[in-house]
Length: 176
Image 1 (cartoon, rainbow, N blue to C red):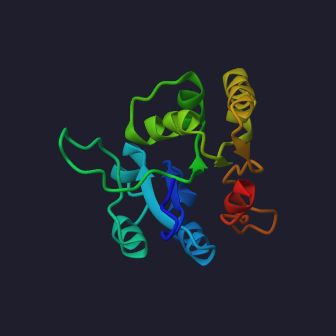
Image 2: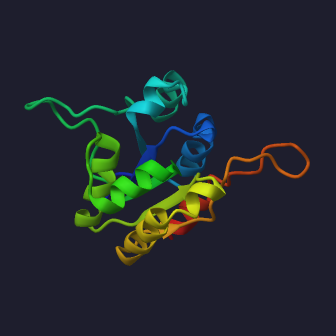
């Protein structure tokens, strides 16, 4: 989708999970791999303070998007060459699989299928929520659409009491 002389463009969709504060790790890894990056945040991620919007904008050189643009406004991002959803929450995964594009972030994920671009997901879902039949059905549907999933991350403390590694760069590996 990018022009031959431009860097490939990566859309990153960020959901409301505590680990979202570290999305800069994914942005840095993407830049090191030659990607240009634009970030979409769910409304709760944006309003709830789950990410440092100013820091993300500084790293990407672009606005963080959460609301639709008005008719006639230019598109602030070029079309994507790939999409990463990280962290992807229970709510977002289920809405996406059901085609409920009620936010710009989920609509972006829904649209990626029609664009035919690779999509990678790093889920952040507790074990109790991951056991829900609707979530399991959503994973089956999304995998059937070609979506590539990393190992789930529960957000629970590691055995040593620290926070387990989310593995942001794994999303880029999943795109390959």
